[in-house]
Length: 271
Image (cartoon, rainbow, N blue to C red; front, side, top):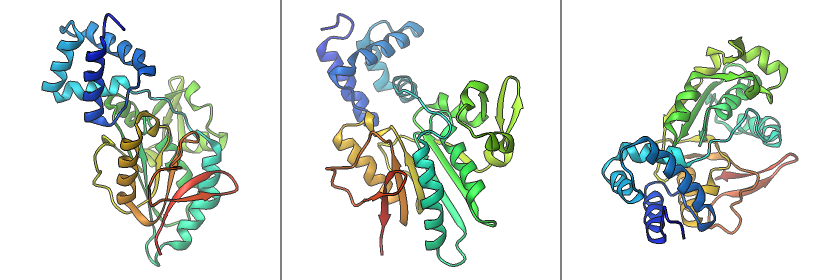
């Protein structure tokens, strides 16, 4: 048992976090919670974990800050190339074929977008491969306000763009100050917003949802809740990407498992 965070307080703290976000801290990642908690206590006047928990209950802005601090924002451009091969070769042609005549719009949500690499990648891929004249809308959300601020800037050090193909780098970025700035024509396609996945979004008729390496933070009940929210937000003919180490196997959902030549994903296929 930790002298800093005793068993009862750890249980109360993780119950509060779970109630606010659906994020589940097991005993195996207790040390991560303790580390992030110590970092926060060093920067504010509250000295004890018990006192901080009471502060969280009173102050929703502090709760937002702390939820930001306990999540890990790991991402990169073109993460999991097999997903993008599927996106380009399977999903885009499929959606173009199945859209109603005259409906030339694609809406895609990057849920858990971190510092923006994924939604900008999605915007670039759609710009590169959609037929002319189609409207592209990319919605990107995260629990981390700090990450969203970085994402909106659209500037990345050179080391962060190593996965971007040269053709994309020259076409969609401007070299600037030892890094690269996403060009305005791509930035203007992406709308960033704060969203807690525990709750329903106001989004509807989404054609594609990316939610990769996010479900691992949730227990089974919270995962099912998130997946049901996605179902409600998606169009009758639409597609869901989750992380390559994540699965809906054994979960009671309406999504259809789809295996392509490049990767596996899930579909909402009605009619």
